[in-house]
Length: 188
Image (tube, rainbow, N blue to C red; front, side, top):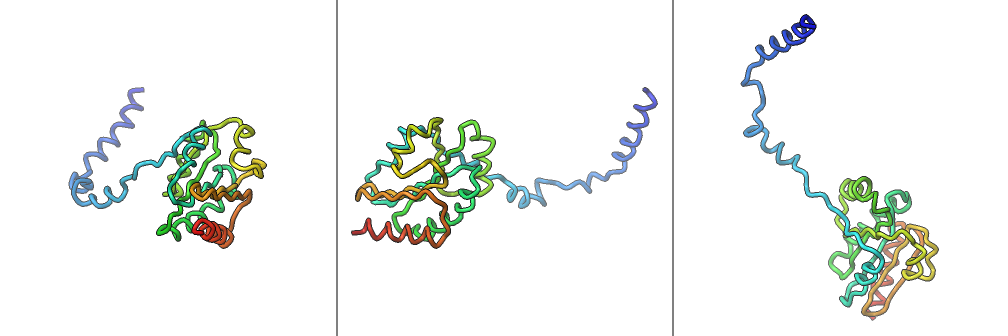
């Protein structure tokens, strides 16, 4: 055992004796810009709410068209259409249009799936996690036409009582047309 110990330590000692301390990078001087660029930005975490809280939050009286997109990390059509929602939201940034992604992922997936997904995709829009285990208790309250499939989207402008519900996935062009129509209706 002593021989094994010496065989391992001797080469390590010889290597360390041959290393010039000036060859070791100094992180406090030269590599400062690299270190700063690698700094991580804070993790974005969705707001978690039950359906009663969700109902209260959507009863707003401001003059904004709200787009609530119901989705989940495991729903491929949902994930595919997200960039279209982000693009349309960005295009209407100067108008009173607000996009909110409403996640239907399970609460126990919050830290393992949802938060990493939000941060990897760099979602800047609000994300709410609807923490409800029994969808049959609230789906009809969102829309009588909703069978429960996702993706699904609710456009709402509470001051004018405007509501439009879509149980489908969107391509960019179709989504833009839907938002344009909604803005025309709420301006009247």
